[in-house]
Amino acid sequence: MARKCPLTTTAAGYLLGILDPQEHAEYDRHAGMCAPCRREIEELAPVVRLLKAIKADHAASNGQAGWSAPRDV
Image (cartoon, rainbow, N blue to C red):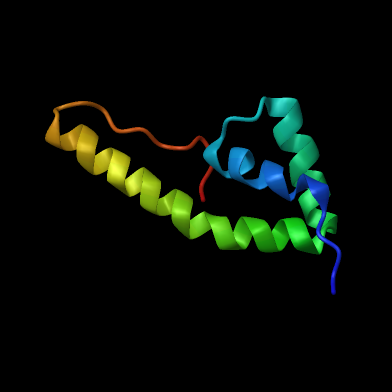
């Protein structure tokens, strides 16, 4: 069984854009070398896209500007 990286828990924050710029850059470098973290990003990306779409639809129906993650997911 493959060992899971403890930093996979950071993938959601990375995708949502809530990490500070230094944390984001560090995780980006880490994920470039870590298969479990890349896999976690790939698995979570559709969920983040769906959340962005739901939030934008909700904001549009309320006449508000929609939320979007600062990075393209």
